[in-house]
Length: 526
Image 1: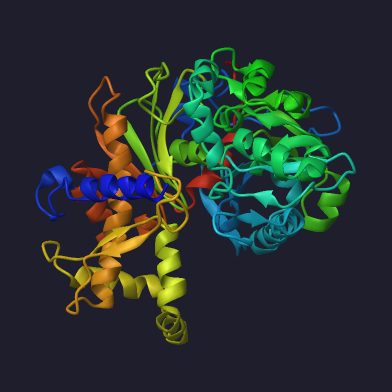
Image 2 (image 1 turned 30 degrees about the vertical axis):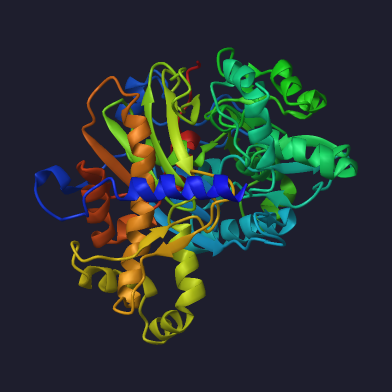
């Protein structure tokens, strides 16, 4: 096993050196800053708004949830990521009024195990919603709709006793790594791919459920509802269990051809009995319920506010940065290295990791991803630079301003150690771990910091190459999202390493904006 893991290391190490060292030269590697208007016009072209072309209340709410028309309407996005929970409020033009956020803690009881207390998670959501209402000072009755997004994959289970079955499992969890390998070896994955157009990942619900069936049978038998991250949050907001297509289609729980749950798919992986635990499927803009009385009291929201289906967070970010056709690739540098583009047909030759349904109904989302992105930077700062972070805070500065200065002080052509960004998991082998390779006594923390930036960017390039091999049309540019966009030196590095123009849009909260779009328009159907 260790020999196989070493092979993965060599593969990744070799890929890092298959490119020239990044240099900031030439228009090919330019960085552009783009202003993105609210996306009604793009969405109208894509059939994502109603025939009037104007922002609309979601779907057709019941009489009890229909709100009085006002001259000002607001739309609320709620984003549950791997490390933060955010709520943001937007007006009808897509202008951000304010945002409230909390750092969300993770539980790491063993290597490869990443969990979250589901009750604590819900309390964090209530807290940011309450903070947002207070900060903006808007009349809650003027909030026309709410939608959620959240990290994909992972597992959030609701029990027959009306309580969470266990801790939620995040998408960076790797406990079920043996199951995809076993299914690949015995031919199960090939059969699964015929239904879902996806390879199986250790962090997907299907692998985690199979692991639970073998290792936690009592808890497995208590499952009533299987949720994704954001579907769980919506359930707590409304009390109504639903699943949503962009999330579910990325989980290996859906037949991508019929766009429905598929019991035969689950039976292939030995979890057919879980079919009845899958909530009804809804679209991103469908009304999935309304804010309950208890939630209204706890958050300050108005009872009866419609709650839309929302989106997988990678869809929300992509639509927020204007990915509405095939010309652009979207990269999101967060906990995960997300690399994606959209096209009218899925890629069915097995060359990409995932095909899923995009939030615009005429497109599929083609995805290459791994948990190898900016979370490694967070780990480096928290673990190796705690005193620098504390000193920056005492001076009223951000530690990221300091690290950006360090990275900028190291010339692009200077040799730095190679960093493999596998602190959470790897994109080459389930047991491969992070490392710095090539450290000498000459190297400083600035060199190591640049190594982290470069290693993360090269992992995005690793996935980009796979996507580029499947494209039928040229790429205009990369639209970049995530915390990386606040670092000019890092954005330029992405442009150099991708060897493509990179565009950074003037949207500071892409996930919540994508949610607000789902809350503000009606989907006209697939």
